[in-house]
Length: 198
Image (tube, rainbow, N blue to C red; front, side, top):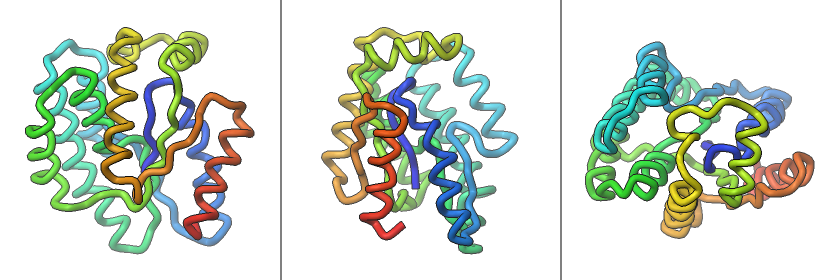
């Protein structure tokens, strides 16, 4: 399962609760993130977040990190029966580099095919939030990294990118209204998990 949304949507706040729910049911849970999840992928994450680069370089870095993550961590975890809970995955690449940066979606689709070889999440929780509200939350929480410092227009395009991905794969996506209180959003998360039998 993956969690997605623009920076400041609050998705990471709910990952602990999801993991605890599954752990209480006796499941092995692997919590991970992208870019990241392996020593190599974490090193690439640092470059990605703090060095200026064009959209193709961004895409290549995240897909290189993703490939290592899949091979070293995700696939072995799934093979032994663990539940994988990943903070961002390929939907973020299509939303940020594809829609946000305006990069060629066809190239991203080719990279996705090469790197993932058909692997997709079973469920994606999309924490949807107005970019202005997300910006206020980010400003109150932390110093912005290179992507978080982008304009509201950029994040509006990213949000539209997520909407496009959700429309193209509605069986996989569950859209959550992320503008409410922590408890309100948590209730939506739990309702989706219950409905899926998770």
